[in-house]
Length: 252
Ligand code: VGL
Ligand code: ZN
Image 1 (cartoon, protein in one colour):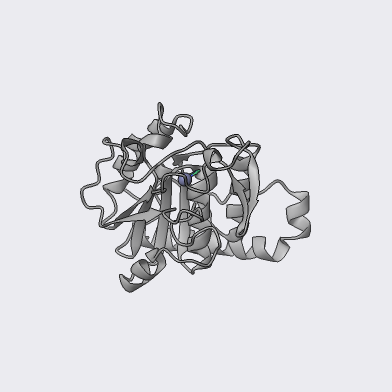
Image 2 (tube, helix red, strand yellow; image 1 turned 120 degrees about the horizontal axis):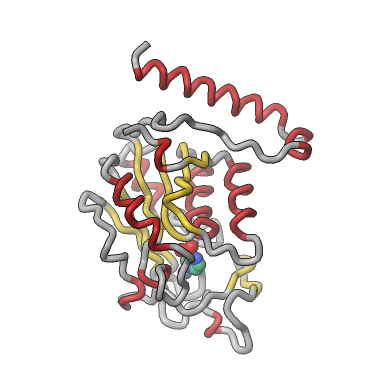
């Protein structure tokens, strides 16, 4: 059996497991701890239809930044390493106006991490971060992915947030990324970056809903974990069909 065939067999087995999981969901899901899809190390092929989306590795989210994600800097060498395997890489950049609606400072009497109701739904309020054109909004100088072919700015409408790189927080306004990927024939999406429980998760779930085969690379991402948000995000992603993998699951 060649390596390729072994991988195909493995993929069929994974697929069968997913089908079985689908049939048993409901009761089984209620009884069992969520089963993590296991991939053998080095078995997920990266082909010319695969794209790596590197989410928001920006100074504001790194140690010392205004919305620093714990150990956020640890994703940088991992992302640089896996990016070498991808012919197609897209970077995203949180890109807010001054006084953006997602900033606690824009709501009298509110503190960061409180939640308010806005026309499009609940909004967590954040410290000011990633203001357009400021040093905090810059992508980390340590990200080294020269072949990156697109940078998507998101969250640039003053009255609406956008965790997702596909749809803004109303779940309707597209950023254009879905159209870009489709037009380029890219059908398999690998997501990594910051933060796992916000922009990574929303990007991955929207990718899955838009019909892309979607993977989140866990060790190449870090979460904020505001009031249980990290565990909630992982269960929502797994329920949506997003595959949770590690960087060493990728084929060499
Ligand atoms: C993010 C909170 C606010 C993220 C962006 O990149 O996950 N989180 N803005
Ligand atoms: Zn933001």
